[in-house]
Length: 207
Image (cartoon, rainbow, N blue to C red; front, top):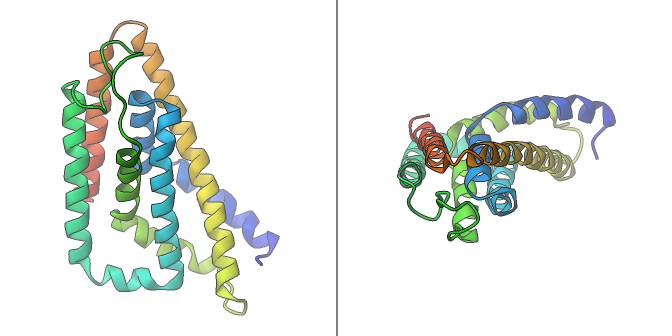
């Protein structure tokens, strides 16, 4: 197990990093606006699986090998970025299941698998995430102790903080939807959400 002294430094460090706006947090806010917090939880499931995988791979040293194969990231992040940008365009045009319907209480919602896939792709296809965990985790791992228990503890902390942070952003998005929805500005809200989604896609592809 890890010492409380180590955790007392790691927790506020990752909390600060997690609350900083990034691709996953922006995605959570957008989906909070368009899908509501409850359905956004499915995206969070995919994102947490992706973050857990990246963190485990980074801690075990696999990330170093994958970062030496940039063509894998280039292909994956461009496909993922193009997909998110396509969804953003559809939202901007108030079309597709990701967009908010004209009547806020009606219209088909995005599928659970679609939402989970968005979260997973956004988390795994971000090279900066891999590099970040390669830098963040090693200083908190004690070489004189078994790696698995330490890494498990850190990943548990990471996923807990990440989930709480996304929940904050998704709730903020839902609040923004209510404020704009009262004025009947659904089309404006779709364009805001679509623009943000396109931005996430470009961020993923070009980052």
